[in-house]
Structure formats: structure tokens, C-alpha cells
Length: 264
Image 1 (cartoon, rainbow, N blue to C red):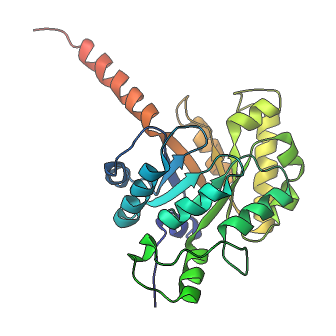
Image 2: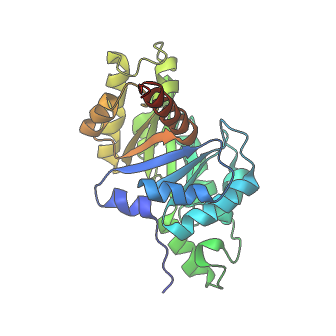
């Protein structure tokens, strides 16, 4: 039997916390090794808010597959042509931004999952299986079982429709984009505002009701208090940091530490 391992999915299925490193600047495959060394479960390539070239993302996805880190790709809004290309190139998950209703989610499932869930096109041999020839029916089932579909709740409209969104078969994670959601709720950046927290609770409750995994992003800054709140609420998937922010934070810390030393 053909096997395929999705470390992030396995972590989530076990009830544990899945952590992703968002990538906006890295261009080389060694980022997969760095993510593995740090203990991240996934690399989250952001093609919505960065100019990352698809061919570079494809190479990094294959590297991630081979070191035991799940490659996820956030596509620009409704760009399902890109979703298909990166899935065929090695991704094991698609993040769909700013879904507004159940029809948006059904379109995502249709594009990203094979039948009977959707109508994803068949590509033949794939990097997920080391380009070995695999019977099509078997490959499609294994990929369906191991490809995460993550839909983002980022607006009042999506919040109003969250029950219908969460009920759509084929979606694995509802991921709260707290930055955009707080802005749409009229309190930009105030992720601890009571109105935003009430939205978080409503989304997590819908996930529990319909068997979806709740995720929350956009919580970086201000220590770990926001993460602690999200975990206690029930969030199980988090975009925990991006590589550039980590480098800047570590660089500042190192410079301050060295400058604080007294000369002998």
C-alpha cells in the first residue's frame, strides 16, 4: 500500500497543537531544515501577501516533504489554478483566505479535493510518492486523506455564515484571521477586544459542532498571553510566527545584549 505522512495532520488528529512557520521571504530549500530543527509541524507559504515565486515554493514544498514538515500554501483569493499547481508540485495543504459563505467553501473543496468530495484534476506521477507510478484510484484516496483544506474566517459576513461554512464536507480547519477579522469588526488590531473574543468563541463552537479543527492566526506580539487564551479556547492550529519577524526579533535581542556588555 502507498503511504504518505502529513505530520501536521497527524499532530492535529492526536488532539495536539499544530504549529506552522509562515514563509514570506525565504527562497531556498534549507528553510525546511530550519523549520524541522525548531520543531514546527508545517511551513506555511504565504502567496497572498508576498511575491514568492511559485517555482521556489514548489522546491521548498518537496524539501519539506522529505524532512517531515507539512508544506501548506496560502493562495491569493479564489486562485484555484494556483492551488492545483502547488498541490501537484508537493503541497499537502491549501489555505483559502476570506471565505464569505458556504458556496465559497464548496468551491474550495471542489478545486482541492478529488472525487467524491470534489473535482480536482489528476496530474499523474507526483513528488508526494517520489514520482513512483501509483494506481490513480489509490493515489487519489491517499492524497484526499492527507491534504488539508484550511478556510479562513476574516469578516463579519463569514462570521454570520459560520455555521453553514463549518457544515461543508471536505474542509478540515477553520482558521481565524484575527487581524482582518478585527478590522472588519471595527476594532483593527485589537485581538483581545470583547467583540473579537466573542467572534473567536462563536467560530470555535461551530467547529466543535461540525467536527472541524479550529485555528487562529495573527496573534504574534505581546508575549504569549494571546496564544494561551487561544489554546484554552480550543484552537489547535496556529500560524505561530513568520521567518522575517523571528529574524528581526532575534537580531534586536542579540544587538541589545552585546551593547549592554561593559568593556573590560
